[in-house]
Image (cartoon, rainbow, N blue to C red; front, side, top):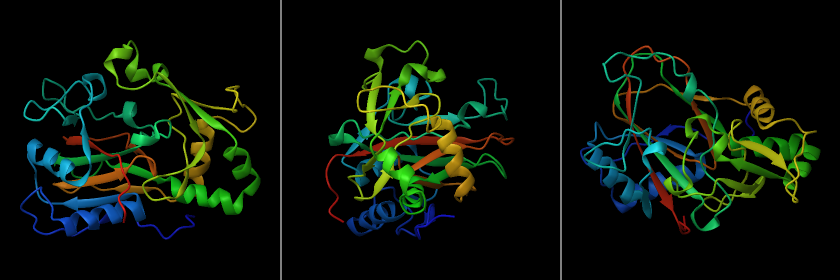
Length: 284
């Protein structure tokens, strides 16, 4: 069970609900919720793509415009920073099987400290009735767990690194380096301090792209694979499963949590995603 009293996915009541632009007081409430819990949920009603971009800019120091291949090749024409995530094909048919996105991943990073904090904003525009959930695994609580309950494992992992090779991600096969503003291979301390909330947190990346190495970049095989470590945490910790309501905006810190989608979404679903970046201390 989780060791920390964190409220992953806590709903915040922000007024007024009629606008995507928040007051300074509301902004601080949202950022403090993210700092304490990693994931918060707002519901300001349905937002246009431009309103979602405005909300992202009002909360963070920057908004990220992803290259098409990282934006699902489906950017909104009104606001190119919005990636449209849908389970409906061009012919209008619902594709219920979401196995491609049903994998745990951690989109934050530690290898460029000046811009390591990336926040997702995922807005439910068309909401399925029952399934199609997004799930979260609280890595701050996982780190606290091994620090107190599995001290030898914590000490070992603290000395190791995670190598991430984006060329191993199936969805990015054939990508050109100039298409993405990131290095193809990066190295991250496996346990590091998140500059957003000063909490120690484990970095895992994803099973598809990551492996454990020592400080000399030699593979480490005796601690299990990244996938096995993820499954250990999943089996021992509560998973937050978010049941969508129309207009929900899930906002999360990509360093504090891993996320994945439910395998099945039988009803039509359209999500709009933006990403914000925090390049300085929030001072909260």
